[in-house]
Each structure stands twice: as structure tokens, then as C-alpha cells.
Image (cartoon, rainbow, N blue to C red):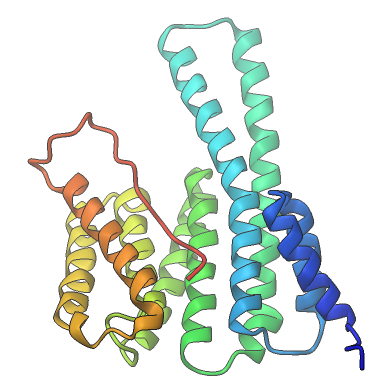
Length: 253
């Protein structure tokens, strides 16, 4: 007998196709329909949702950084007001788009996703995502808006860290949380000592449990451990680099 595909199955299938075709806005559209259904997301669905939003927002973050760099360069060399105004308007448009995407996924996390999630990995996963997207908002904000986004990001990360104490140190979700939270301390709060302490603690605890690491999560866990170590190298005061920190973060674990 032929298996009947549900609307959910079709949306998941189309989201996977969109991912392969690198059409992330369409991937988000299909995963948005999946979230609307009154049903907990599976691990695969949860990861598809994360990949969809992360990739859609990544290109916008990259665009914003380029425009922000141009703006700083123009200010330094006293460019014309016409040029400055054009760049400023374009940057604000990117900020508006970024804010819309971040607000949307945060609303989904605060609403159906957290409500349906069982205690444990799923809740940690969603709280980490919430911290990440408030961090992205803090990146592009100034003044009171930046302070508010930073506070909300910090609260989400802290809540997730509290729950992560109950899972293994080698759990890829817990490691990804520590990685992204440390990036938050370094980039947003400008507290390199806290960033390094958090990253080092997570790395050292995971190393101590490496022998008991399950085979199915070995690749994910060791990859994030490498990213933690890379950031620690970059953030160490005597590190030999060009002064630019290429921070890594992860969202699809």
C-alpha cells in the first residue's frame, strides 16, 4: 500500500529541498508551517528550523557588517553627506529586515516551541536559540535597544546554562550553548575574561568525559570542542593574530 503523505511531511520534504538548493527564505516558509501545527518538533525538524533561520539571518548579518565597516571608513575620511546618508539608509533597511527575522523566531520560541518542548535537550536548544537571536539584535543596536537585547540574551543563555548542568558535558547542545554564550560575553558585553573562563570550563569538562562520548554525537561534539579551542586561542592576550577575532558560533546542534 502507498503511504499517504501529510501536509507536515510535504513541508518537511520541501524544506529539505530548499536547504539543498540554498533557498533559505523558502525553507523558513515551510518550517513556519510545520511550527503552526500543534505538535512537538522532532530532533530533525528542530534542526531544520534552526538551519533555515540561521542561514537566512547570516547573509543579512554579513551585509550589515559590510555596510557598518563602510560607514566607519567614510566617517574617518570625511566622506560627503550624500554618500553617508545613502549608506545609512541602506544599513537601516538591513537592520529592519534582520529585526523582523529575529523577532519572528523569538516569538515562535516563546510561544509554541518552548510550550511543547519536553524538559531536557529540547528546552536547552530553544533557550540557546533565543539567546542567539537576541544577541544578533544586540549586534545591530545602540543605546537602550542594545542594552535591552543584551539583557534578554543574557537571561536566555543563563536559563539554558542552568538546565545544561543536568546533561553530559560532551552533549553537543550543551557545548554549542557554551560556545555561543562565550561569544556573547566577548563580542557583546566586551568581557574577554568571562568569555575565556566559560569556554575553557566547557572544553575541560568535555575533555574529561571524552572516553565516554557516544559514537552518534562524537563528530558534533568534537567539532564544537575544536571551535571552543580556536576561540580561546584567538582571545588569549598573547595570541599572534591580526587583531580581528573570527568568532565561531553554531545553531544546528
